[in-house]
Image 1: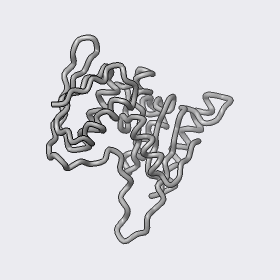
Image 2: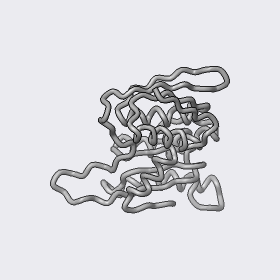
Image 3: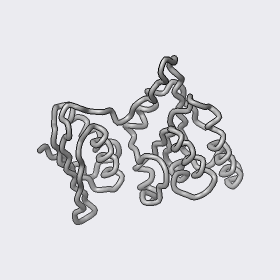
Length: 202
């Protein structure tokens, strides 16, 4: 079993190290990480590639993850484009990149209301709306109650992927408070930006 010591590494380095070992043919890994965001991201990445993952909390905030391939060689990508409808042409994949909890500058209360309205209106894009990526202050929208959270939940329930930056959640102390979306990492977000046909940044 290959041992990866990822203590002290910032997102997305732990995931990238796992990816590199899998590319070398590893079917069993033991990974050491020292924060909850890295634990969630590494576990999700490996499970998405057909691995069984368990973890054990150790002293000093350390996590030890053990991963073993369920079906060696049957790897699934962690970030996948939306499936195309049968017998239909490729639809535009639009990604919305949100980096703050308010929309526009000036009055914060107004900005919060505008963001809630913006998110509630996004479904009008129809099937073109593919994915939302929440970074920095934008992750607060996935954790606090209100119209914005309701709108995000509605989109997630209607097959819109919502990626929420794990390092950002950890920075704001919101890992446990996240109420919608997948805890993600910068590798997933950069890959999503590359896969998207169109990117909107409000």
